[in-house]
Image 1 (cartoon, rainbow, N blue to C red):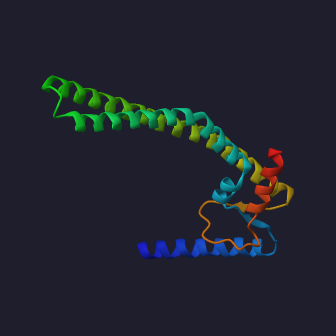
Image 2 (image 1 turned 60 degrees about the vertical axis):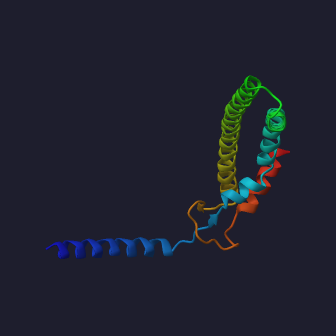
Image 3 (image 1 turned 180 degrees about the horizontal axis):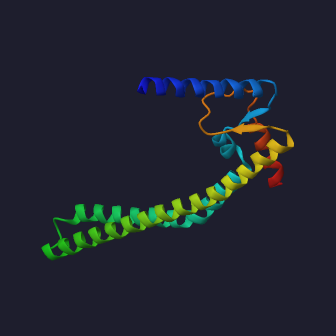
Length: 173
């Protein structure tokens, strides 16, 4: 009973597949594949976004590095002068170092969060532009189907990533 139902279901789906294949085998389709990661890496828009983010976050990064160096200098001084300082001075200096480390860690966490947020914000814009570019290139070159993620193999004959990169370069000028 269950075996009959499964067999009938299998037979029906196989017949539908064969029928669909016969219809589609009579027509020819132009299929392309896009390596989205390659397009993203090679697009001038991504380079511009990376440079913009680097310029935007470079001053904060330098400030954090300076603070880190300052704390290191304080720790070195503490280790060096520990024997000649009073117990109160040692305790105060140790508290200051701990406080500054805590503050630096908070600033570094905020920096990473802000950097990731801005990077994601720019990547969303670029991804939308890439998708629009892929659609435009596909229409202009009369592709019937374009595949991207999940493609395990695409021959160079159907790889249209280069066309999309060229289009993005033209759009950027």
